[in-house]
Length: 232
Image (tube, rainbow, N blue to C red; front, side, top):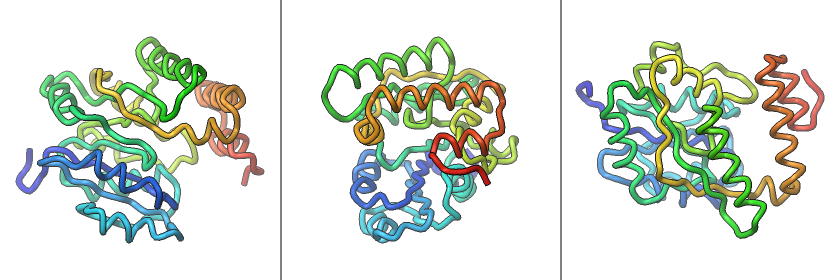
């Protein structure tokens, strides 16, 4: 590590996550870990609550997960940067697993195993599908808590301000620079989008959007369709 660096910086983008941010911060608390909350203009007091909950840094950014992630890693001091969704919690053992993976110089970054919060066979099937997509297809999503060596972000010029699939862009950056490690430690993420929209319907929307990404369709059009609003 360079002088003044911590071992790991956990970057948490937020937008109106008052009910979730404390859990995310608590799960990431550990010696040698810097927790940075990047707020995109919350109106529910998320930023203030994050400060009270002990976040080492709380900064502001224009809204948009990609922009917030970019602002977060640029403010980070860690040699490794972990991007954690505000509605996701890290499990015990995450730090040791991450540090163990990055002890291998061939590992450029990685992700954790996904579990959804809540009961039901449908969510278990989604978890199985996420494991298959990550292990067979090499495409973990951002809700699996992606991590990367900071120097690779520096070399890549940061994270582009894309409207969707910034997580898969980050995965591609990792894969271009070394091995993607899939850790056997889980993260627990909210199933609220599936519960709100229906599991099958949301899964189908995800697959259509992913197909658009893989076909290199205009990112703005994919995002507009996915979010149900006209393209700019």
